[in-house]
Every structure is written in structure tokens, then in C-alpha cells.
Image (cartoon, rainbow, N blue to C red; front, top):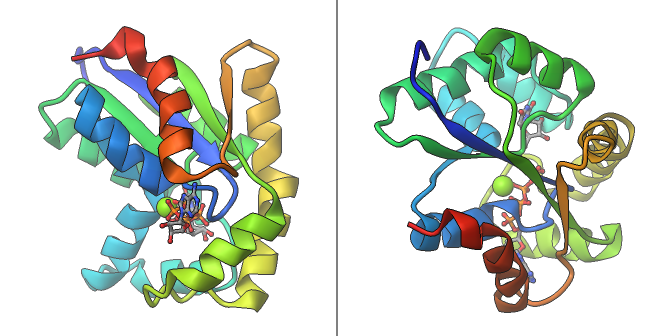
Length: 190
Ligand code: UP5
Ligand code: MG
């Protein structure tokens, strides 16, 4: 990234907590660029890249793709984009992801937006989504929940200890969740 100074917000929360949905709202109102690590990985599969098969197998199992791969995709996307405000959605997913991103990019997030939602509600949403995602089946959903609790919650704990986490009740309807999100982003109004 060189000398480019960027503001990064990590958007975290369990599978189906509404990260993508709320990021689209934040982009529209606050002029951030949305980078979903999962979307970048799915685009990499589609592009026929040499890592495609490995990535697809990991996603089918709900496992975390090696951090070099994800960080490269995020870094390239930030370099290519003129914007200096980024929402990084669904990354870092474990402590190794977090440490590697900080080491490679020298970026630490302005804050972490954490969408808190029950597994029961997230499961309902994912099973109703119907967008053909290979990981939206009950077996993979259970694996994704387990990985979230075991590997991703510790990342949120890490930033919580630094007072960087803004936790949102994500079980409410989309528009109500966005009211809470708006209050947090008010200082970043474009
Ligand atoms: N919906 C949203 N908000 C709602 C609300 N308030 N009330 C009712 N319904 C609501 O929402 C999910 C569904 O719920 C939608 O139909 C929506 O309309 C509805 P969405 O906004 O898509 O939720 P999101 O949190 O983005 O869910 P997603 O499934 O994308 O989360 P995951 O974290 O599971 O998926 P991601 O794409 O980030 O990762 C997928 C896989 O990629 C991972 O499991 C992993 O294998 C791999 N991965 C890595 O290895 N490394 C990474 O860094 C990132 C991903
Ligand atoms: Mg998503």
C-alpha cells in the first residue's frame, strides 16, 4: 500500500449475522468501499485461479483459507481502489489472520463492528437465503458456527481488550440494525 493512508473497519459476526447486508447500507450512506473476504475468495474460484480448487474445498468444509491467499486479495483490492475508507467484511477469522494482516499491511483497524446474533436466527437466515452458496447447507452451517466460536470469537476478544469493538444487536430487523450502525458511523459521514 506504500504511503497511502487508509481507514479500515473490520466487520465481524457469525455466518448469516448480516455483515454483507449492512455493509451495502454503509457504502451507500458513508462512502466506504466494501471488501468481503468471502466474496473475493468466491471470485477467485470463478476466475479459474490456481488456488481455486483449494479455496472451494475449504469453503465447502467451512474451514479458514490460508491467510497469505486472503491477505493478498484484500491488499490488491485496496491498492487498486482510489478510496481511502474500507470495510473489511468477514476477515480476520482467526488470530493468525489478524497478526499476519497487521504484519504485512501495517494497518490496524479504526474499530471493529461486531454483529451479535443467535445461532438459531443465523441458521434460519442462511437456510432461507437460496443464492446457491455451496456452504449454505445444514452440515456446513454447523461447521461454520463451530469455527466461528473456536477461531473467530478470539479475534473479537483481542480487539475488545483494546476497546475497539462496537457490538450491535444483529437479531433485529435489517432497518433497525442499520439505525444502530448509523450512529456508530456518524463521525465518518461523507
Ligand atoms: N438478513 C440479513 N440481515 C437480516 C436481518 N437483520 N433480519 C433478517 N434477515 C436478515 O445475510 C444473510 C441472510 O440473512 C441474507 O439472506 C439476508 O438478506 C438476511 P448476509 O448479510 O449475507 O450475512 P453475512 O453475515 O454476510 O453472512 P455470510 O454467509 O456471508 O457470512 P460468512 O461469514 O459465513 O461468509 P463469508 O462469505 O464471510 O465466508 C464464507 C467462507 O469463506 C468461510 O466459511 C471460509 O470458508 C471462507 N473465508 C475464509 O477462509 N477466510 C476469510 O477471510 C473469509 C472467508
Ligand atoms: Mg457475507
